[in-house]
Length: 275
Image (cartoon, rainbow, N blue to C red; front, side, top):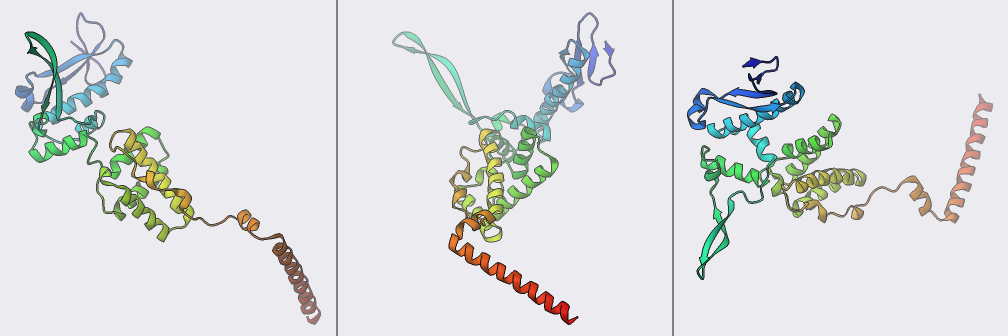
């Protein structure tokens, strides 16, 4: 065996390409049933180096699962492999009907600890809920949106501030707990504390984040779909205010302005004359 400058990569005598290799932790050798993880990572060194990250993540997940530890690697693995109903297992079997074997569908219901046997009952339940897309917090959603959209750091901070405030206003901890009533309550809070334009801007941002959650299967519907931004009044622009004034009134205002300018110039002449 020949080691390389890249950790976890080796070349095996008589075999082409490069192999990922990592020792199984001593306390897990017996339950895992082997002392070494090893598989082909790629034919070229460049290809193999890219596969090292995936290999480390995969073995980190195995370590966490066998130790019964909730780690970032395990949570990331669950987030990338969401399942609507992880506790339901559907298999095919054969059943004799009228002397003939007929293929039938068999549905088995598991418990959380069937999926995560080395975790406590409470931890296993939380992992199953996460696998279903439940129990995600605002930070989880912002991190996901940032990974997908690659915004500027300042934009990510703004997203975090807006959605954290929305969750705080309605006293919610998890994204899937947020309801249409909560969306209305957040809208009313913004109307009471911000201008119309600011209210619309913040609702658009938070709604966009919930769209990401919906697209990823964390929630079934976006609670902000019930909010109509057209109903939120904003300050009129200068052009709109101008259009709202009748032509007759604009003429009166112009005459008044001309008279005011004339009076001001007359007053200035008097003051200059006195001086």
